Image (cartoon, rainbow, N blue to C red):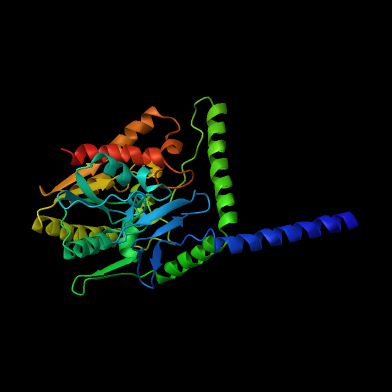
Length: 362
C-alpha cells in the first residue's frame, strides 16, 4: 500500500512539475503570439506578425508570418515590386492554407510559379464574399490595384453569408453576427498559449497516429477502399434535399437567402473589377463529401457557372480535376485532405494550384 501511495504521489508531483514548467516556458522562451486579432464583431490577422497556429488538436502547429497589411506570407518575405502587376486571392481556410506552411498552401505554390506577379492573399478562415468585397475596396483605397482577382467560393459560404457576415455598403463596414464564436476562439487561444509543450506533444502524437493508422489500413486492405467519408452540415446541401438538412444549423430559407446574398455580393465584385479593369476569376473546388456523394440536390458547379456567366468573369471549376484524381486513386481522401477534416493537405493544395495556374496563365 505504501509503494502504491508513493508511486501515486510521485506521479502527481511529476505531473504538477511538468504543467508548471510548461506554463512558465510557454510564456517565456516558447512564447510565440497568435497572429489573430479578435474583436467583438470582426477578426483578422495582425500586421507584421510572427506567430504559431494550430487549427485543431489533430493538426500540426505551423508558423504564421504576416506583412504590413496583415496578410499571410512566407517566412522569406518577397518584397512587392511596383513594376509587377498584382493578383488578389480571396477565400477562407482553404485559400488561407489552414494546417499548412504558407509555401505548401495553394496560394503559396502559385506564388512560387508566377514570379512575375505580386501576390496578395486576403484570406482568413470562415471569411466569405461579403468580406472579400470589403477587402478589395480597402486595398484599392490604399492604391493597390489588382490585375487579376481570384475569388475562391467555398461551400461553407452559403451559411456564412446567411448567418455570419454583414457588409454595410454605405458605411463601408464589415461585421460578424457571431460574436460568441470570437470568444470561443479566444478561449482556445488561451489554452494553446499557456500549455504549448503539452499541446504540441498531444497534437504531434495524434496527427502521426492518424497517418500511421491510415497507412496500415491501406497496407492490409490490399488497395481497397479503407475509409468512410464523414459528412458536414455546411456542405450537405449539395447532396441532401433541403428538408433533410440538419435543423440545428439550417433554417427553412437559409439556402435561398445564402445563395441570393452570394449572387448580390458577387455582382458588386464584378462591377468593381470591371471599373478598375481587373480580370475576375471565380474558383470552386470540392470537399471530400462532394466527390463521394455528388451534387444531385444542389449543383454547385452550375451555380458558380451562373455567377460567372459574364464575359468579364472566368470560371475555374476544379471539381472535374479532383473527380479524375478520385477515379485513379482508391484512397484519394487520405492523399488530398487532412485526416478527418475538410481542408486540403499539401497534395490537395498542389492539385488545386496546378488547375488555377493553368487557367490564369493563359
